[in-house]
Amino acid sequence: MKPFFKLLPVLLLTCSFSVTLWGKPQHIILTGSQGTGSFIFTSELSRIWETSGTDRNQEIVSRPETSQVSRLRQLRNNRVTAAIIDAETAFEQLNKYPELRVLSVLWRNWLHVLGTVPGQYLTLASTKTMLVHDNTMHFVRVWKNMSPDTKFSWFNSDSIPDFSEGFTEEVLAVTAPAPLHEINSWLEQFPGIRLLSLDNQLIRASRSTFNGLAPKKIPANTYLYQSEPIESVAWHPVLVVRRDFPNPSATKLLQLIYAQSNSLNPHPLLENLRRADNIAFQKIYAFHPAAKSYFKFK
Image (cartoon, rainbow, N blue to C red; front, top):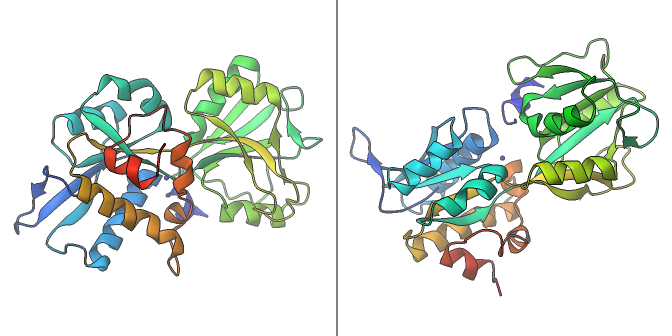
């Protein structure tokens, strides 16, 4: 299981770049730390860029930056080519940076909840203990406000439980793209474990606390033994560039990114990109002109 969770925890050609010791321009994208979705996405994009033959005299490089606001500041100051930020930062901070534009919203990060509690819904009354991946802090904050006596245990890419004795807590929560291989493994391995839907109270509380979350249904048959859609919430990381990023370069990059879902063996983060997801945000984010044309905004 460990290699996947290093993914958890979801690019560009421009005038700003650095140069390696060999003089090869590097188009730097600021991301989360190694093992996060944004870092892995950019690393995969770098590989695709290299193999596509688009411009082998230039390369795309991931540069980890813990602070999401610092990513925006460095991009504003033309020190890097692009940045990937989370949805909450995009909602709260992008309007403070008129020099920046959204090139694309990226993959969906779903809240996955598995449990042994009665019924098909995760409810406050039936849950007293919870095991949570540390990329799901937004959900924990909401839950703690509503049920402060719940006991939480934590895991991440460096402390993954082996589940040799099954699930010791009533509920496990993790944020990730879907489908997630580990969930199918758990569903097969542990009788009584099932995916749980969020009830309306939790969905409303999540949306009111975090603007970047949207109610979404994990489609039926995404996972084993899942015959019905699962009520959940999801958020999209956001790819940001400068307003003066050249239109031809922006279009070329979008074409490269979105062509991957039709490739023979696409990376899950690229396979889960949907052009239509951007349309829902056209009145929320300030998009780059090339993105407006590419996504056919009205």
